[in-house]
Length: 215
Image 1 (cartoon, rainbow, N blue to C red):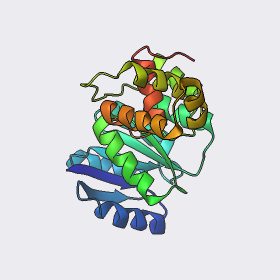
Image 2: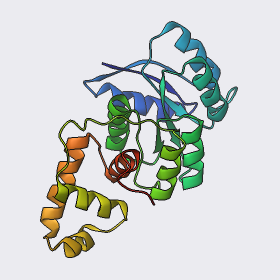
Image 3: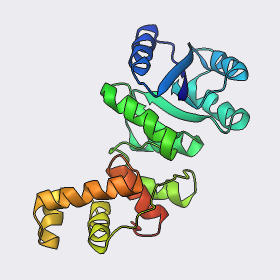
Image 4: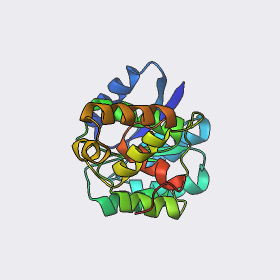
């Protein structure tokens, strides 16, 4: 069971998110609060796996809370919730120690996906974070992802992986490898399953961390 805590001063949003998370059979919302100070106090008496953290809160904002979380509770994973979608802003939060970043405008299933991804692999990146940004995070060891890569990738899967990292579309990859787009999608799904990633960003992080691709 994934034990969660939620810090957000927007009551309506927070309550809606709690209802969403309670529908996850493998997750439990242990407590919710409205600012960073309340969160840090709650963490002293509760074992939490993941904190969902808003950035714009009174008393102690998300940015300062993040710094204290990393110092006082280094094992607790953090998913940042924000209205800001700029890549540099996202990467800055990752460099401070966030494990995931989700826009408040995201679909409900992305929240669930982020929780499970952070729980299993230690990170969650959306498609908006560029390959160059991801490379910087991997190189600086700001993220230390884990992958379930017990089964090795085939040569053809490695070919598809490298072309995905070069930001080629499925159609463009199909043209380069003389395959059908449907076959390329099949290889992509095989890669995701083998390494335990959930999206293209995960494939890119895997390739970089294994030395299979450098921007």
